[in-house]
Amino acid sequence: MGTSGTGKTTFSRQLAAVLCLPHEEMDRLYWRPDWQSAAEADFLAAVGEVVARPHWVLDGNYSRTNAVKWNSVECVVWLDYSFSRTLFQAVRRAWKRSFTQEELWPGTGNRESLRKSFLSRDSIILWTLKTYRKNRAKNLALMAKERRGFAFVRIGSAAEADKILRDLAGERSAC
Image (cartoon, rainbow, N blue to C red; front, top):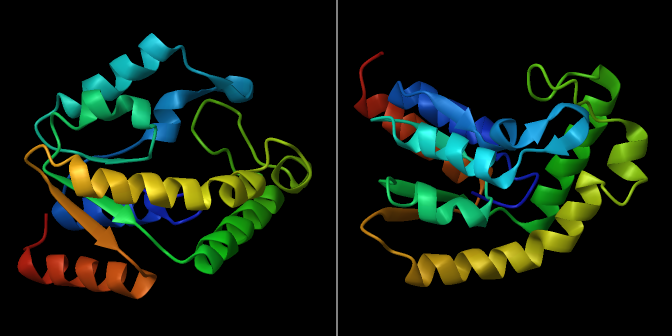
């Protein structure tokens, strides 16, 4: 978990590769074509299907899914990067996606544009600006109280994340 722009998907894909586990992106489960959100029951069911598997790496926030996913969690990883790093990454990602026009989640047709990313009320940049401090406070509180038999790892920098991945890779043999 982490604020938009921290690199949750990138880190979780790398973590899943090191651990030889399937990776699921919560945004892929949530977003439908034309930026329509999934019905709440459908979204919660999709998350439930993922966490019913024996092993997985799931990235995303969506705190309303905590009751579903945290019953099956062994470890929660929080990417808690600095505000400047997070904002830089969010801007860089939005800029890149606006020009490449890559489809964000297969079959949805959802793509970012300069207008949507930088000039709209739905801007991911604006979302990052508005939610960074609130998410950080919420995650600090979760880290302090929501221990339901799982580890809670807080990663404060990209260098720390890279070291964790290298250390895990060194402990494991290839898939």
